[in-house]
Length: 214
Length: 190
Picture 1 (spheres, one colour):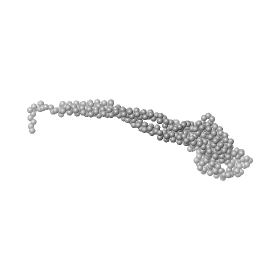
Picture 2 (cartoon, chains in turn orange, red):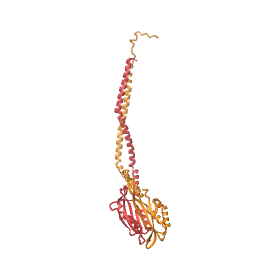
Picture 3 (tube, chains in turn cyan, yellow):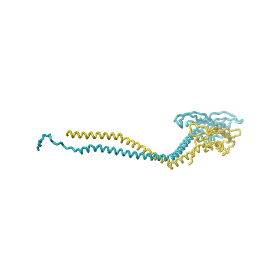
Picture 4 (cartoon, each protein chain N blue to C red):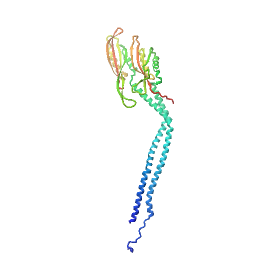
């Protein structure tokens, strides 16, 4: 096929560009983007209004419940105080001895040849550093009682009854009530004495109570 | 491609760049802050919703009744150990009553804490009423007395004691007792 170019290429008509289509393409993308952004904007605006309404509603509900909350709060506070009081009771009970079991153990293990004429609880204060139970968590120094129960007794025979006293000492050490709270039982005194004109042998047993658990 | 076409494409690209730039700017200046606000509010609404649910449960009649029951139970438990401060003046009477019930004669009591109550170390909610007692009883009655005090409600704690056999064969007893007193009284009216 031959191409006859009579105009030698100078007068060829320019190729046609569809200007309307081009203009359309040019503006479609920005308009679409603007549309998407606008939708996002109006969506967010609407969501904001809805959320503000919800918040107002919740705040109203909270205000409505304020009286009921105060009523429940007062009971919760009372419970906290009672619980703290019971915790205090536990603390105090831990520093005290249940004497009835101790006294029963003594009377159960006392031989007929021995007579108790004095029971005396001696106390001296010892200091301990413990955690403060209320307020700031500091250490505080408290004084707690170190107790010794002195059992003063005598044997009815002139020569004494060392065996009965040693048995009493051993039985007391082994007694359940003593094992709970007594560290040791020692014979502190053995001496001749005179009771109402009668020669006897006097003994003193010292029951030394534990203080470590305080 | 001819120069005019190139120019048109160039114009198109320029238009896109400018319009996208404007839109991005508009997004960051107008839309994004609102979007952030929505996210923040959304979080706030979610938290508030949880709080409302919790609060409804907290103030519900069932919860109130349960807490009241708990309070009553604790108050009863505490009453087993502790005298209310309103009853504190009656401590010495309570101690003497126990002794009278088991037939202890010649029983004397003396309140050691005349002005208010004694502080108890490391305890905030309790005070102590200290009472000294003395009497003359048999050893068996002394044991009963100690037992009754340790079982009584409110509890009577025996701090220390001396038992001495006197000339008439009776046991001369001296005891220091402690009654715990509630430092904070609250009513439990329904």
